[in-house]
Image 1 (tube, rainbow, N blue to C red):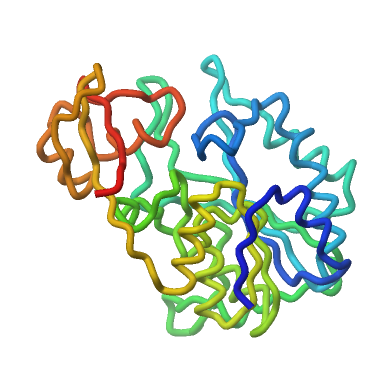
Image 2 (cartoon, rainbow, N blue to C red):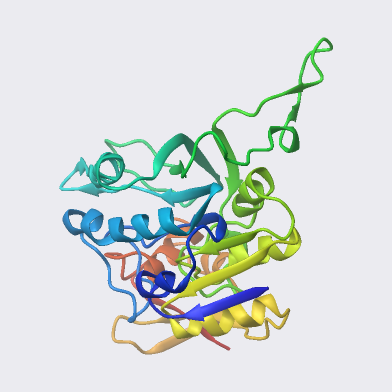
Length: 303
């Protein structure tokens, strides 16, 4: 079963039976950072925890005792200070839901978008929080993820808690419309680690069904919820192997007059060196507060 349903996950999850899901893995809209389309409102940091905690209660209900919940999320800076809403979320989860924080991992984003400033280091990491329903019964197959050791005495070793997954930026130019997809390697890893074949995986913020693609490769069933109608259509096409839309990067003046078209962010950057990098052009379309680059407006549009 591979299913993507359009609608609000806070409502749709209520239709699932108790103890019916083997793994929940998702990356919800980050607070006040990325534009996910008109149908998805951006939550301010002060409102974020109140907004998402009811979903955590539902996730606890639908998880099997053997199940896990992997949450990919990141914080942000406000007024030159690091906002604490993520830490508030973890603290309040422990007090207000029955989900148990099992572990914390770090995703080091290989080839991530450059950010930071003169008085702030580049931030190439995001959080991965691992919640469980019953710590005694969870599925966890360490033997599937053991790594080759560097000494002759030991042939394998346990991985550390810093995961080096790529971002999805390399494939955004044409086949991916979503502003912030994670790379397929991320859900592949945790699906392999925490589930068996034919288990049921849920992604409440499915986006373009990257989690579903990983489920298909590993022979797991998948349910995805997504508000944005265009993402749902694209997800269904992806899962059926019918990615037919071709997108280009269009350059406009500040008065919104068309100038030129490029097949990728990289091509656009090579022809517009006034931008710092191809990531700056990408950021103009996907990040709140970045509207222009090199004195031009940039849009990703159907060819």
